[in-house]
Length: 300
Image (cartoon, rainbow, N blue to C red; front, side):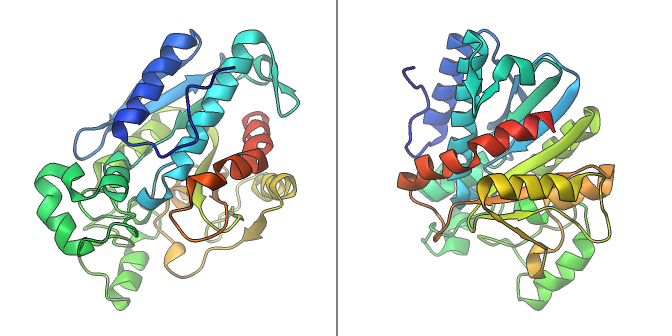
């Protein structure tokens, strides 16, 4: 197979080009949008499978963790290729595992932030001045969206508690990271994802982040059925460590909201090890570690 998705950094133009080529090559690839970012970039939703049992994978939530978007787009291409020819991925027949499942992948939830992380403040138009002021010209640690809001602090799961924790840490205004906004679901990206989840009967969700080779699987006192068993299986496959929420990672995340909203399993998987942004040279090694987990995640 001549790959469409390359192991390289993926700016907005490259990303949209890849998606167009995938939809052209693979008739079964379904491309739609679940909304738009604050700067009106499409939040692409890629689907595959005939079933009504929905499973959701999300990447590109944090801007400097852009490698997660490349990983999910690479996985989608591999699925489409095996689906087309009746082949296997990670030892599983792709047509069979998707016969009663429908996988939805949102590779980039935060396209504006990823453009900032990759190309700087010129990527965000009217927000350029704010971005330059907040970042002081250093975009290497940028995780937020164009408005300086950390999307994974913006979901309605203990948001008020998290807001107070942020204030105690001196985070009170738009920032490159960890500012949860003026209120829960204040951001277009957050609203788009929660709307999608409320419209579809999603069985479980996985959000890819980086880094640490860790899996977060619980939220507060909520214990969705089979969540711990699924987490243990994912950990056994990847050799990642199961960890519990703590500190500023305790509330406000997508995984937290999904669990509290639906009482269904959701997971944050921190891929790779090192310092963010992880180098693209790690992509192949990371992908080989998580490929089987992503396949098993469809059928669980």
